[in-house]
Length: 267
Ligand SMILES: Nc1ncnc2c1ncn2[C@@H]1O[C@H](COP(=O)(O)OP(=O)(O)OP(=O)(O)O)[C@@H](O)[C@H]1O
Image 1 (cartoon, helix red, strand yellow):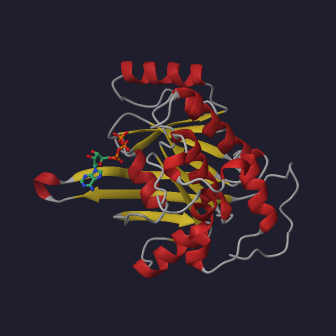
Image 2: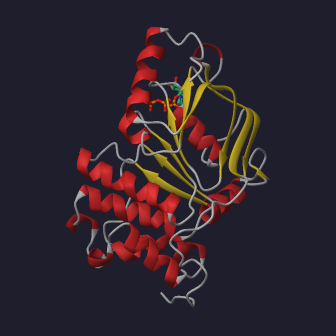
């Protein structure tokens, strides 16, 4: 694969871009019908600012993954709206949604989802190969350096630790300079040290590369790496915390659980 000439993305401190990378308005998602009907999202309105790291939190079944899937164009919407930048997702054809995910969104999953026969560098550049775009060499070098993979590029996934595999997945998500990176419990399969590394990389990608990251997590420590924590319960946004710390998030979870999901706590 060839590289295009180094471009503008070489500065280590970049101003935060303005506006919203993704937003939802009255987003509703209903699964099934009649006795199997589940309202997974019940009129969610939320917007994710560009150049910020947001954690989505909430109890099991509160709709975190569904929100991420609907906002990333991985699942259809029952009512309301979801936008990626200025693009309304509701009503887009499957082909358009596939194109949008490929060209504008990065994903990091709990189970790294790497191709076992490709080495780390090939895994990182694979989505661009599929999209037919050439990686920006300077950007790619910066991403690889940020996630600390420079010495592991020729290794296959089986030759890497879980933490290293997830670094490859993070680099892959960042490599195409997507408008937003969605993570679904990206540290859920890692021990706490490897998890802390990945969270540090995600945070650095926001601070140093200007990336926008939205991460679903159960873990207050993980949420402490974010600029903001949005709390869901029963398919609704119930709280929105700026500059969360693990302690404040844990405190919030305890208080909220004690209230039996009865309403916002006004954090
Ligand atoms: N494909 C589906 N078909 C039917 N119901 C679904 C489907 N996906 C999710 N649900 C339901 O929607 C609700 C929200 O699920 P979701 O996976 O978004 O929650 P979550 O907060 O991510 O949970 P967890 O933390 O356990 O992963 C749950 O009641 C779930 O059972």
